[in-house]
Length: 144
Image (cartoon, rainbow, N blue to C red; front, side, top):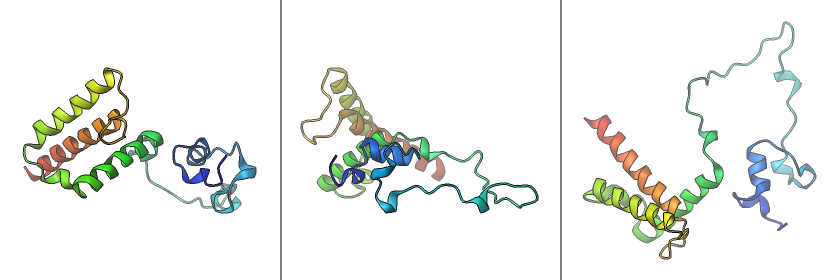
């Protein structure tokens, strides 16, 4: 295992930390060690317990981390090539990003996983285009 394996968000060790699993706890660097629950936060008879009203809120921890980072890498590639948030300025965005989504999906369905131009996974690139479409749709709904 490389000395910086905890810096790799796709490594099993990193994902285990995200999921609060300590399969290799002896190897954890001190800053990444997950402490046991504090006794003062545990419910006990007569003791007031802290509250966190998060029921019904969006659970972003459910986003698969490998997919999240693959999309982030694809967005980084796009920002390096076109500029940060350039996708917001594209004319004919609905047709163009729907087309890009379909092209990447069809390439993937045809057996090509990695886009030769960007070096990123076709599905991550398709997700980026879908995210742009969702963002623009929600933005237009909010304005209209």
